[in-house]
Image 1 (cartoon, rainbow, N blue to C red):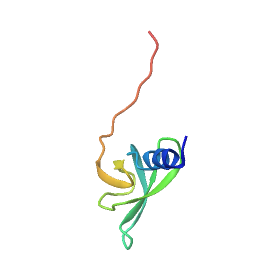
Image 2 (image 1 turned 90 degrees about the horizontal axis):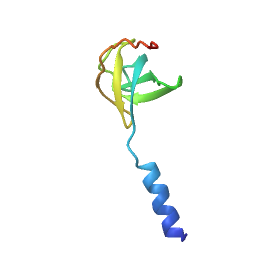
Image 3 (image 1 turned 30 degrees about the vertical axis):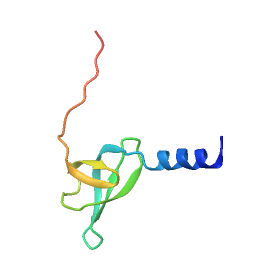
Length: 78
């Protein structure tokens, strides 16, 4: 694999889009950012502060896109 191929693969990996539903933990009005908890249990600083602490939001590529619905999750065995 040549150097150009390795660089192209690296760019492809870095430019992949990501999205998740998280819960706002903290809002920074001055910076216009929020700290959001991720499904994996970590936290991430994202752009956007139009929602309240505790709201579930959809995050896409580090930006809050919208409020996410609160849906209960149930698991049962049949």
